[in-house]
Image (tube, rainbow, N blue to C red):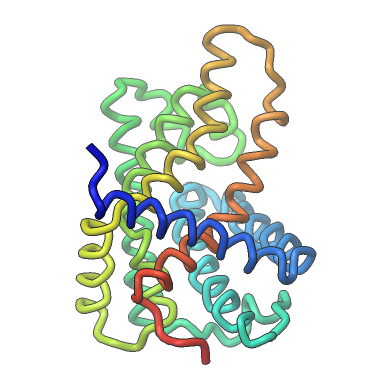
Length: 245
């Protein structure tokens, strides 16, 4: 039976979806360009021997925090630019360190999923450099991504809080995790949507459906672009973020 609280949660999630779209369409070309640049910068980490795959997610997380700051400022009409994405690094160093550690936990969780699968060859290839990493079987790569995504979902509200608020880190983490327990729907929706293209890709490979990978990766790419706006809108609509400044 649907309760009043359930209906309110659905209504709030719908509102966040609408708000995220409004934020994105305000500067669509700029946001698309910045998102591509962000992904390129994160992918460049893969060229670093041994540590590259493990560094990719922390770097992407820090860039996402700065991206969240640009979204916040865009509500005052500040047009986002590439220089803003890297300018002077405006995230507090304590928050940056915390976000990096949380991202590393996601990497470790993904590796645990890979280790528990018993596929030791894939686990070794993860740290063997770009040449070997590309040879990891699709199902093992998606297993790693699933583990990392599940752990990353726990920080759904924490990232915008750490990026924008100036309170003690412990307090911001407590607020973020508490809000996730009270209102998990947006985080779970984001996880489901982001996992959908990879899930369909694996299903296509298992059932030999012959669906081209690029056909499924394109919606995955646009979901990655949309996620920061939905995360920000969800945190704002639940009263976690400061007013626009």
